[in-house]
Amino acid sequence: MNFPLLSRLFITLGLLLATPLLTWAQASPPELLLHCGITMVRPMTEIAKQFEAQENVVIRIVQGGSEDLYQGAKLSGQGDWYLPGEPSYHAKHLKEGLFGNFVTVGYNQMALIVQKGNPKKLKADPRELLRKDLTVILGNAESGSVGQEAKTVLDGLGIYPKVVKSAAFLSPDSRGLMNAMKKGDADATLSWRATGLFADNAVKLDVIDLSAQFAKPQALLLIQLKSSQHPELATKFMQWAAGAQGQAIFVKHGFLDNTTPVTR
Image (cartoon, rainbow, N blue to C red; front, top):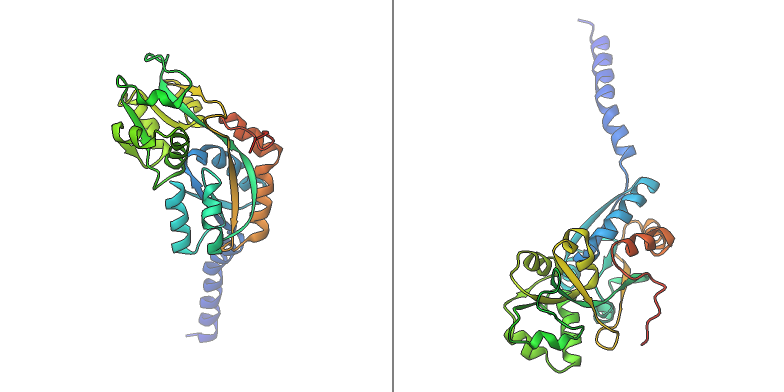
């Protein structure tokens, strides 16, 4: 038996088998992770797809309530960005050391969401939620931004405890609120206005906009995490989302863009 020849054949076969694996490893694109509040998933998914095509990267999106997302990012020590539903989460957790730079990618604002055609004839006033003839649902202030902001709005009027007490139930996030509203489980809720303007929700629901007197627009901060393994790409993506193309996508999905004048 020709052992040198056999050895060369095994070596050649090994190289042939290894080559696709080596090629795959070399071509495998960087993966980045976004912890994204549920309300912003639609525009951020669209922005991510554009950025992936341009930069040959893969962006994974984990979605949930803003507080739950932060705790998950903190526990895992993984991720490139955090996008909560309102800026209070940045202020609340800043001292814990997970956050780097941030950009404003738009604004959202609380609104009353009602059944299509507003059959109960609600006015543009959160105090309408105290009406005895309404079935009302709210977001949970402990789990996500939609509940936290509803609490802020209703606390400003001194009626939060009363509304919570009479609410049919509390939902952990805006998606739960919208699904319940579409099923006809409630007459009204307080939610981010953009959620009522999403195409699949707008078929069955109407948005009653509130003045800034009741509900100030809240900045959407795309925050770079210090756990990012690709900080340069992370920064480039933030600039993309805050730029003209990203802002056009946010507006398309019912958000206010990052040039919106906000009175503090």
